[in-house]
Amino acid sequence: MEWVVSVLLGFGLSAATGFRIFVPFFVAGIAGYNHWLTLPEGIAWIGTLSAIILFGTATLIEILGYYIPWFDHLLDVIATPASTIAGTLVMSSFGTDVDPLLKWTLAIIAGGGTATLISGGTAALRIASTTVTGGAGNPLVATGEIGGSAVISLLAIFIPVITAIVVSILLIISIRFIVRKIKSRRLAKTSIKNV
Image (cartoon, rainbow, N blue to C red; front, top):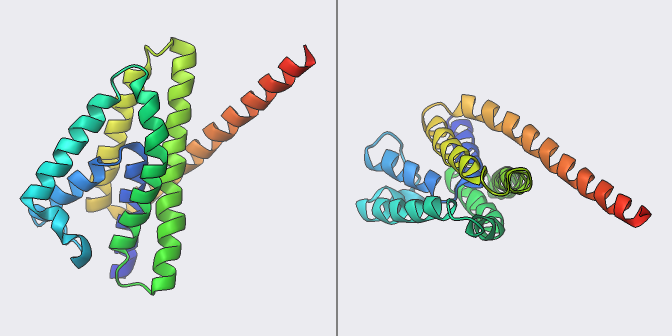
């Protein structure tokens, strides 16, 4: 049963990396430092004071970057592949008591895949916000992403089962949003060709 909780914890933190890459590491580091969370041996270093300062600084820089017009889109281009890697690493780090084949399958699919879908959904939301509001709504999107990452990180640490349900709902919403964006682009291309 303990490995299930570890997998759910990794799943939740992986999802949080889809919103913001460094927030889940920062939150997990603080939780480890305060002994609210037992960090696996391979990543116990994130619970050190120097790692918390490092992740806190990276979190602050990442958060501030998303409030700069045009730079937020550049960060999205970088963040999607980076969140995939971070989600995979987080999931593999918490799935320590699992067969290596299952561990890496879960890490790639559930960890990296979840982070990618959420990151893609938020990127599509930012594009929609830019289109509709001329970028004026992007700070609101950025604030929601920060909040989402922090809340999911905390839920993953303290209530992993609830986190799995919340993340599953977010994945469904992200997939629907991404599919809707793809369909609208195809429709726009088709209408341009017909003109």
